[in-house]
Length: 512
Image 1: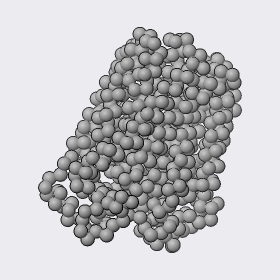
Image 2: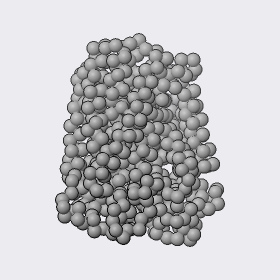
Image 3: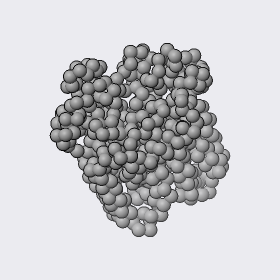
Image 4: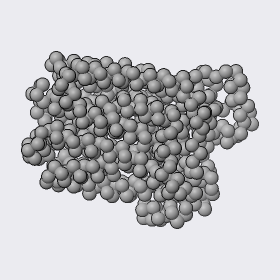
């Protein structure tokens, strides 16, 4: 990862603002002022270069107040919380549903699989269409459909109806999970993004644990439909907050903002008419929007990152959607005890959030300091050196706990170790790909989300049968082995990632 003297000399000769403030596959980021003749805007510390360089327009999201930016970030994060929260709610309700519909819990769990798969597929559609219609209209219209489908989940009278509702809700609720990175990239500078991703990812990682926790407490006294009515209420809240407070965040830096203002009449901007009237995302065509996600996935580093994340995160969904099936007979847990048990991953994710808040920035600052203000995206992946041992240890220990009936507190610890590690890893992988391809922020987020959900979709189909037939020591040990082997992909990216990016070239999209 270190530069040769010739490379350093080349970096030192970069003097224009255009060369300095944007990412280059060959030179990476220049984050410190130290070049004569470069007239650049810097952060309050007086030396950190603002990347990208903000315009002088108050319409530029980079120039918005800190309160406005963080309000939008909070709403986007809360909306990103919905899909996994709703998906995991069914992990607890499947037992009373099975009794009502005269099915086995494993059969009812198939509705989980359909929902999980659509969480990934929906994100790819979101980012593609947003490059033509704008960020805000996609957020608004997808939530418009997500709300009634959440109500449908609660009102379904048969398994077939419930499964159809779950599939549709999964597709439309994923709008801010699959496309949330676009909003972060629009509003925040390079040196701020890792911490903002940490917040957004924290909501996503916490959501599949808070869903079962709340649901378990609710169904001790109420019917299974009420956890889904709570999901509907949360979806309605996000829709209202979006209508009231979220602006269009896309800003075209290549044109005069007075000619193509991103935000006009509130209603017309919300539904997407304004963006089309001013041709905000010109010269994109619908064909361009279809090709953008494919173009991003064909980048070797993005594809390898997604494979790594799939093989790392799949076990999160597998454990979460089936754990109640394991611990109910093992420890004699009822819904209330299962609810308390879900405090473990919540605490672990929050600790990961706090540690990651400092860890990712510390790694970046250390590298920048040692390389004269120069930064490469691959540096983000060094955080996995810290997180991987926690994930491997957690999976192995969890297998022994479930097979040899260790005390439930040890089982809790094992689960927490894995969740802590996955929180750190999620931010590292997401920040790496955003730094590598900032103009494809939405597409990057969508494919990472697709990898995460695809892995969960596959494992949730056979997790219970696998553990039952071979034992949890064998099944979870194999999962730990797959995770450890997948980490070799990170080593490949650290060694050859930059060369792969240079050889494959940039995205060269018509709009960011």
